[in-house]
Every structure is written in structure tokens, then in C-alpha cells.
Image (cartoon, rainbow, N blue to C red; front, side, top):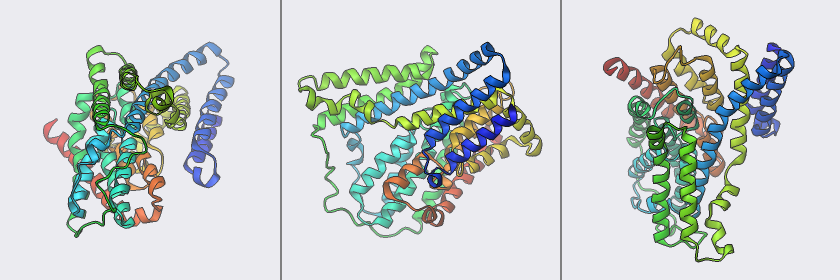
Length: 427
């Protein structure tokens, strides 16, 4: 039974990794893998009640993440429908490449911590496409956005799916995560920016009228500003809600979505149904990336099978014996996440190492959050942000390797060094 589960998992995982070559969407592979693993476990265990209880337990944990993502993605879609992000990006006026590099990097860094790295990448690249005419300059800036968004998402419980998983799973808390990971994440961004800005000279070629943030929908400036601040406040409210009420984070996210929904309904109450629909949460729900949510469901269920059967525990024991040092383990996980999706890697680490072994807010979990969140920047396919940039700007894999991988690695390992030093000196 265990051998069959491992074979199915490896085949399914290979299908996910080589999605581009086999022409099968990774969501389909993840769903089939997750269900087949549990099916094999049920047929081999011959204890229906036990397996059902274990499945319900793992699915309830996965459902918390799925509803959290559903709420967050819907809020961001509502903000995007109102062109709310123009409130921020329209204020950028400089034409100097080096200056723009730092501005774009820091906006993406902090915006990612409040929203998430994927959404931030989409927003910032959309802005760059309206601002910079030269394709080479735009590709380079887009790649910096990927590094910045991944770094910013690593120190926030809502900035990256992996940190959200660790937060919801109880491995980290909001305050301690930011306390331990903020400085390494900042260094992960600053080191590449400093290295690149020393060589980057001149000004970029703007579009014919970069000040015009053309909108496909007629939205007033008052509505843009109002929806921007409501949306940001709604997302920031989630970790505060968890801290105060001790309810799971998805409850706070659903509350925030409900408030955003009501606010936008009232805002457009004077319009007829056809004119109002594009601005509503109902329309946003039709536009969100549902396949990504189902992908997380499939892969989390598959990893749950490995955890329940004790396979992950055995791998953890072997890994600990071979590698030994927990910091080296975290760094390796980060590097591997550039090749393999970081969601199942973090899910596996959560299953391999229990809270009894590494209690809540242990250094190991914070280092995993940093490494898994930022290691994906080493390759363009290594993170959701990178894949989004690749799709939007048609960034070639080897172009990224040649131009970006070194500076991304510089930031990643500089952040690792700062994290280790920070823990040694202060903790």
C-alpha cells in the first residue's frame, strides 16, 4: 500500500512539474493524485471509519486555506475592477532607471506583504507595461518585481501561500513571523537592488503618455480612492481579527469580503444592474483563478496522505540523519522550491516535522517561511509570481537564468546569512 501511494504521488508530482511538456494542466494532475492517494489508503487500510476521520481532519485544514484564498482573491479582483491600484502607481513620475528600480522594488515589497506576491506582480507588471516602452528594460523591471514580491510575501502571513499555510497551521504567529523574517527579506531585496543600480545608468523610454492610466471601465477618482483604502484595510484587518478573536484566519477574510461586498453594492446602488455588475463581488468571483484554488486542494490532500501514513515522518528522520543541521535543511528546501512548487514542499515540511518537534514560532519555521518564499526567485518558474510574469511578458526561461538568477541568488543567500546572524546575535 505505501509503495503504491508513493508511486502515485511521484507520478502525479512529475506531471505537475512537467506540465508544459505533457500538456496537462497541473490542477487536473493534483486533483487526480490527491484522490487516488486517499483511495489507495482506504482500500489498503480496511478501516473505513478511521480513514474517514483522518480525511475529514486533513480536508478541514485544507479548506481553511482554500476559503482564505477565495476571499483574498475576490477582494483584490473587486479592487482591480475599480482601478483602485492606480491610486498608488500613478504617483510614480521619475524616468531614471536606477531610481525607478528602487521605487518599483520597494512598492512591490510592501504591497506584497499586504496583498500577496502573485497579485502584486500582476498589478506592478500591468503598470510597467503602461510606463516603459523598451521591452528589455520592461523585462528587467518585471524580473525585479518578482524578486521584490517574493521577498515581501515571505515576512507576512498573507503575503505568500506558504506563509499563509504556516500561519493557519499554527507553526508561526503574525508578530513573531514579522520580527524574525522582515530583516532577511529586506536584505533579499536590497542586495540585488544595490548590485544592479551600480551598473544601471540612463533613463527609460516612456510610453507616449505615461501619466494616463487608461481604464477600461469608467471609475471616478473618489471611487478608486475609496475602494483602495477599503480593500487595504480589509486585508490588514485579517491578522488583527485572528489575534483578537482567536478564530481561524479564513473567518476574518470572509468577514472582510462581506464588508467589501456590502460597501461596493451601496457605492453603485444608483446604477442599473448591467452597469453595476462589473464592479460587484459577484462579478469578481467569476474572474478569480479557481484552478489555482483547486490545485492547492489536490496537492494538500495528496501530502495529507503521506503525512497520515507516516511516509513523511520517515523521510524527515532520514533527511535529519543525512543533513543534520536544521538551517541547512531550510536552505535546501528554498533552493529546491525554485524547481519544484513551494506549496507541496512546505506542506511536506509541515507534515515531516511536528509541532512537538519544532513548537510554534521555532526558528526552523521562520527560516522555512523565508527560504520557501524567496528561493523561488532563483528561476522564473520557481514561484507563482514568476509564472505570472513569464506569462504576461513572455519572459524566456534562459533569458531569466542569464540575466536574473545570479542577482536573485545574491539576495537569497544574503538573506539566509542575515537570518542566521540575526538569530545568533539577538535570540
